[in-house]
Image 1 (tube, one colour):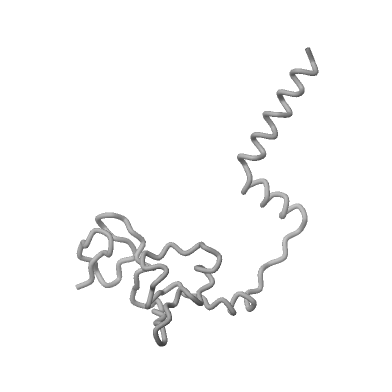
Image 2 (image 1 turned 90 degrees about the vertical axis):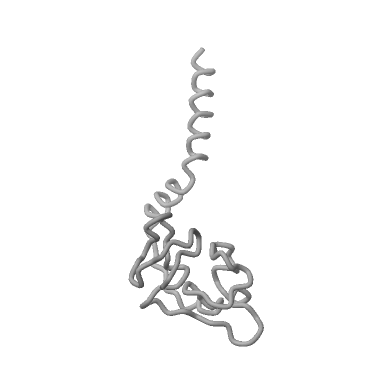
Length: 117
């Protein structure tokens, strides 16, 4: 029987999350999700896109020999990203930099209050 890699709770073969700790099981192997295996002595992380851009959160990183999320670095060139209009780009930037926008807003408000007095 399968067990959770975090809390060792028994799992059903079709479980997507651990019923005890809530860990998402996709990154740890799941029926129906392809499991990539290393060829030779070099770990998968050495050639993985997620390790290269430092977004990997797999527990066995950087020595993983098996992984369900593996994407070869050279596959990054095959991804067709949608093009965004300038308005969508600004909206995306503002959503991802809310703290900076807030600080600039406070600075502008402070400046406006100083100039009014």
